[in-house]
Image (cartoon, rainbow over all chains, first blue to last red; front, top):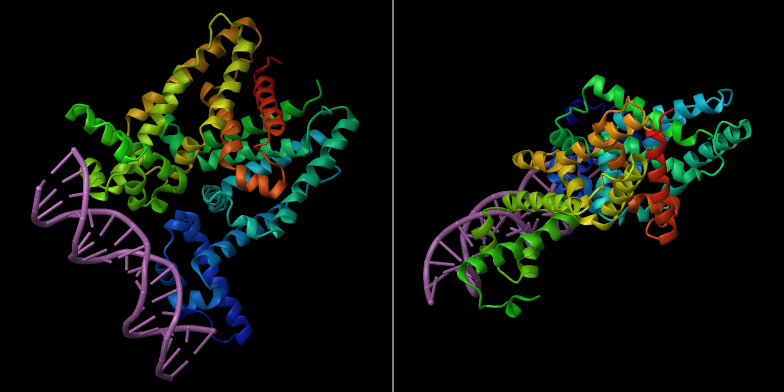
Length: 217
Length: 217
DNA sequence: GTCTATAATGCGATAGAC
DNA sequence: GTCTATCGCATTATAGAC
């Protein structure tokens, strides 16, 4: 959508939101694509249909815009996760199976988020530290796992000695790597991770890995 | 070591190697620290004790220098891996346990390699594709796993339906994430992944995850 | 709020001496 | 092979008009 095609009928407040939102959307794409140092304000201006002055008017600096984009991408993750309701009526094993599969699918569906996180780790977490709100946003995932573990332990189907944060880390690692390292892995092992059969097989392996890890011995 | 402190007594050929090697070392650090777009030729020149012209004389361009650094960092990985001899006299389970632990330790010990790989995935693998030799370098890891799987299946301790590349991917994912996502994860979950107890516990969890995955049912 | 024009500097790359 | 000096463009950021 070019700037010319934007509706001009909204209120001033809506216009302001719309301008900010549009710039933020484009910025998120750009930072995700090439990282903080690789991103170009010129490119964000051109793609958003505004000029550079507008970006500085709304966001102050390139770094502040990056922080806003980083926060926005974590917020979207949370929103997507909230839409996934792990039914408490499901028994623990199928519930965990569903949750791990959803995590794998989510990562696969949001490469731009994975790239933002990679970027920020390249930055050694310098900017995420400026957004304390992100802690609360992410820790709901742990609460969910804690309850699930408790139910599974009570039912005798899960082992009792697993730390939920550790479990979360394993699920994330297996889901994340598949997207984050796609290019180098695909090249080296000549296996196209994007191919549907490969993708499906990998999904099964990941779910299976976690389920076996949790299974009471 | 500053340029002034370098020995001047070596032959011309040695000097050339030394110059190239020194620039390459510094470049590897710089690219690993901030990625291709974040790296500064000025910084590499200053840190190596040479000037920019020397870098262009030996490597041609910033991108060519990056490719050389990328190749060098993969070569070092291989070298380290070669030093790990998985004793064929070990029975399959202890051997796999040792191999996974070594992979975890290796990743933890070489954050600069992990950062190079992250960087290159941000670049969508554009530069690694120019180094076909890297395929051979990495696939020896698969051969090792294949033999190990075969022995374990023959002994009846490993399941028979696991693809070695898939297994390699899981081991890498769990080892890699621990380093690659250290900053964001540590911040969000307020768990210092660098702390010795946390590190050791995570190592155990990773080894255990893979062992349970492979165990014959 | 939004634009054009431009300042100010950063940065990859090279010329030319030794 | 190595240096100094500098080119030339890219890029962040701002001034000032509307």
